[in-house]
Amino acid sequence: MASDHQLIVRVCAGEREVFAQLIERYKSRIFHTTLRMLRNREEAEEAAQDVFVRAYRGLPKFREDASFSTWIFKICYNVCLNYLERRKKNLADLTEVESCPLPEEETVERLFENREFQRLLEEAMAVLPAKQSSALVLYHVQQLSYNEIAEIMEESVGNVKTHLFRGRAKLREKILQRIPLEELVA
Amino acid sequence: MNCSTFRRYLNEAESRATLSAEAQEHVLSCGSCQMEWRIQQNFVRALETEPAPQLSAQFTHAIMAKLPAFAPARPQRNYEPALLFVLILAGLATTWFASEGLRQSVLALSAEGAWFTVLVQQVLAATLWKWRDALTNILGEQILQQALQVLLITLVTAAVAKGAVALDERLRKMLRRL
Image (cartoon, rainbow over all chains, first blue to last red; front, top):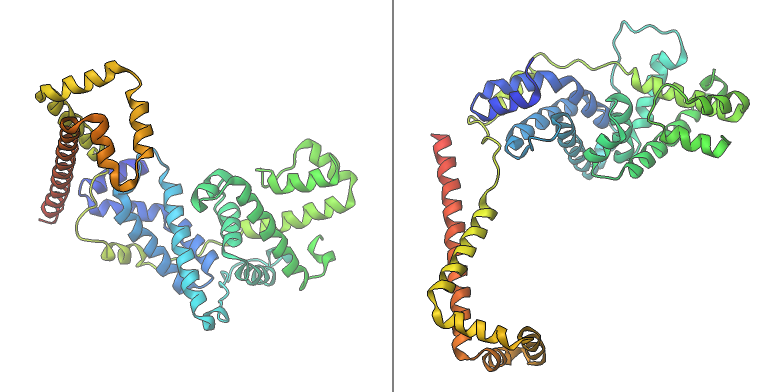
């Protein structure tokens, strides 16, 4: 399988359709991130498309020694911040944060695996500051390292850890308001 | 490990699922930290097991339709600063070797020693609107004029080089569109 860099060289040499392979390779992770950050399916899909269009236009600026994965997540993070900023301008949007539906076939066995908890988590994530929710999504959902997140968010590793710590603390606080502590640690 | 170092460890540990031996030992002996650890584990599990969302079938096609018709330029190194530097050096060298008077005047000044210190002191001492007079007094009319000529040639060379690079870039873009 061709590496990201090999595909980029081919795209830049004029094989425009090769970019579709890069989209296929990253679309799930990018969409997952935009959805977790924006909490609105339609907007998230549009943002994910913007990420790839911006990446395509920005390929000439892509450094050969850089990681394409980190680079595209950086674009993704900036696109999501723009969307959130735009949303802030319209206060009405703030009251209409959607929950992401879960697949029907999901088994409900434990509190932390059921829909109710996922829904509570979604709600709690939706009210976190953008930097905290971004750090949580990039770390826990995308499994990126502190260094990668720091590069994406253009912050120090220490700041990333602080965003994660505060984000988790706020999530816990929000969920504890709805679920008794005994159930949370069961 | 005590409670505060354990809490710091929970926040900073790169490992998401397992505890170090030292941390594990503390968790087994401290009910409060054990609760903290279990809460965090539950959150992390819930976050990490969020189901991956399904994208519409037309996603890739929709993006490809939005892309510009031409391919982005191949990543290339920017030689412009290096080119400008070489041209400026060439301009200075040409002027230096072409002007016998300039060479002799500068060498004579250098031979006197500490001329640069005197120059700086006098320039700083001079008022802003009399800077030219001060330079003329120190360097002499001829050297000052020649120095200004060198500066002018250098600036013109740099401007021409910059224009040539911009023109080259524009032509490349036009050719790519064709």
